[in-house]
Image (cartoon, rainbow, N blue to C red; front, top):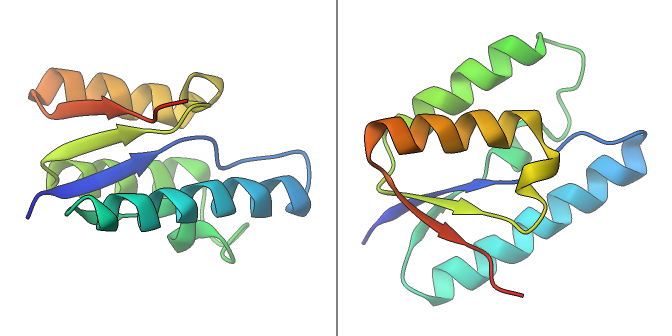
Amino acid sequence: MKIVYIAGSFRGANSWEIHNNVLKAERAVVDLIGKGYAPICPHKMGENLQGLYSDETYLEICFELLRKCDVLYMLRDWQDSEGSRAEFSLATELGIEIIFEED
């Protein structure tokens, strides 16, 4: 079973937007499990921890998780996210397989 890391927008203008971004990632978890993957969903990790640590700390944790994965899964909105763009670059550099959410 391949381990897949989910990347996409997390931040938002308010808690409602963040919540909706987390829901998008959760829907991907369900879909990916159904396809036989073991998903890592960093959106869930940071969902209720806003303000405890810097964005840089969270991103470094995300990078460490991504380094352990076989696949990077890009949600539709990934290009709107600075963090997701950085995760894409790291995966490309490391030769991690990248797949994209279908429309």
